[in-house]
Length: 277
Image (tube, rainbow, N blue to C red; front, side, top):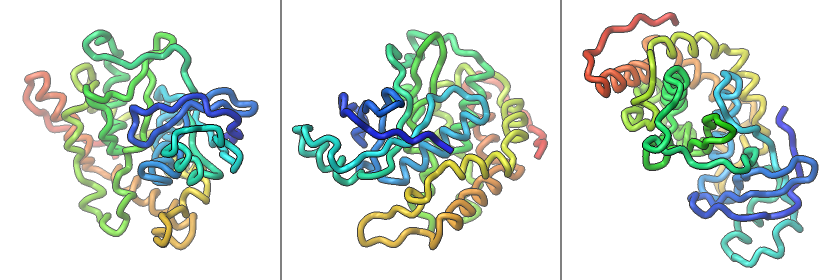
């Protein structure tokens, strides 16, 4: 299970993000960059942070520690910004934080193009799998810290879950067109190898463990006056599991699109790939 810490001090807002995350100090946990369920896309963005971050961690990709951050009624009363006050009031209870990386700075593909090619390929494949649209040169959502590249901010991934009613097999299996804009695509090595290795590692057991990290209260959260998309948290988890299972079935159109985009970047003809699963 994810650790849960109680927020004790609102350190500073990070207003460059549309959901107004903030650095919070927590009791016993230190500093976390926290996203609030009362901001932006609400609980769905927090669910994406947990699922995508948890899955990346399980696959050995570099993501900061994820934790649940509890906000109580007394927290943030001294904050003068009325917009932030409203967000905090709407975010009582469970929120999601990523470990603050002190001294980290934004990745710039021009200033620091030296990226491990295999890691770049793995991240490109992973972002195509989870439909993460926020890894472009304009908005890389990558940090450099302690001589390593770190993946942050996955709230915009899994965008299908904002409209479960519209999800069908065609949408589930669809290629990820935005992969051609991925900031790490020019540095990626063999995409076919990344596809084979990562697909083999994403088992039902791994997916089940990651989905179990999401608190029921977030899965059942819905805007005021709107019914949750599923009758139980277990049914919601089952829906995510079915989505991921279907997306991993061969032929994986999202992986094929990533391979094609990489080959086009390098000016080489597309070679038909054989899928292992």
